[in-house]
Length: 138
Image: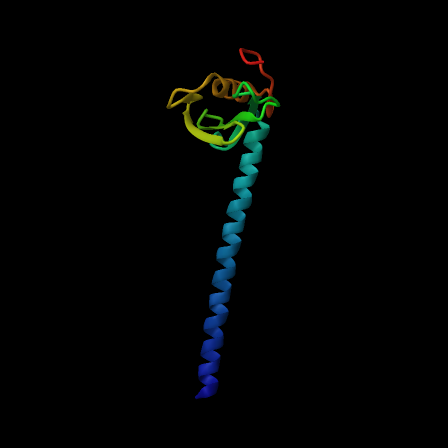
């Protein structure tokens, strides 16, 4: 009796192992196929996944007249569709304030400061992570 139960349990465990192995193989083949298709699309001049963060720029400036060294900054982080955020930190002598504003299609859903606009423009133009100032507060 114990031998029969042991054989049945062994067979069930073996079948379960084969099923689990087959499912893992199927998922792995799917992932490899997806990656191969993505590489083919990227190689064909396509922008790839438009939802991935790809446009980044940092704009440093002096927000407070008494403070020098460009300690304040705005960082634009956007995907290929222009959706993302602008993160701004205004640093003074005794305090720092941080703001985040959502972006949709490269435009602020709330009014953006000139510095934030500059960071967004630099990110969209692909000017690199460290954008150089070219207006007003230089």
